[in-house]
Length: 338
Image (cartoon, rainbow, N blue to C red):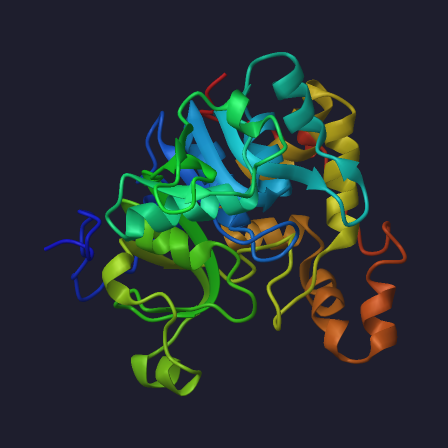
């Protein structure tokens, strides 16, 4: 069986639950990887950290507007090429330090794109088409920077159009609020490109805040990513932290400030001050939570909905609730690939 018109597998196992380590093991060296969410909301951060612990290399990352997830993968040496339309920390901090260094020194190849171009490429795959026409890059150099793009004269209007090839990522990793054991997934709030990623990717891996019974999932509005697209699902509470997963928790500005300061200080400082304590030596969610501030952090980022003032406070004090953890205290990462 295939996904309609796309020649991609339909996943029909009755129980797709796995742990986070098993889920990460389904991503292979050299894969084209689509990451769900966007900017500082609903990024699959627990899965990204698991990929780094697994030592995955030579990834080609594709997506729209991203930040911490792609930056962390670049800082860990896991990325060979970026076909993202944007990678940065625009909410507060500016450019993405690890990503910028990797692009400037040539260790990550930049494949310039734009959000709508990628959307049309994914739509081509879901429709079983080899390409889609776009107007959105006219007046830019994006076409010149992408040799795979072609131009044609429309036979109906005589207008020149750009043709972009279909995009079928090897793997998509998404994070959502709810799912069930069958792989049905409910994304609350803006889905960004996640629904297209689910339909166009060969393997779809999902982490969720909670796995619930199917009846409860239907009561919440039903799945917007149906089970037959999903390969595996893992329950990972706080799986988007330090980005937001509304309505459960907001963006953790204090933690991201720590991350940004470590990344900006250079590769060695990033390894010592962030990768060692928060990635390599925080493999289980409870250890990660303790090092990220524990119950106090949970209470702080969950307080966003109490009042407008509570939400605003989360963005005003970047040091509030931060936890000092060093690589010396955590020990050296065991089994990590150099």
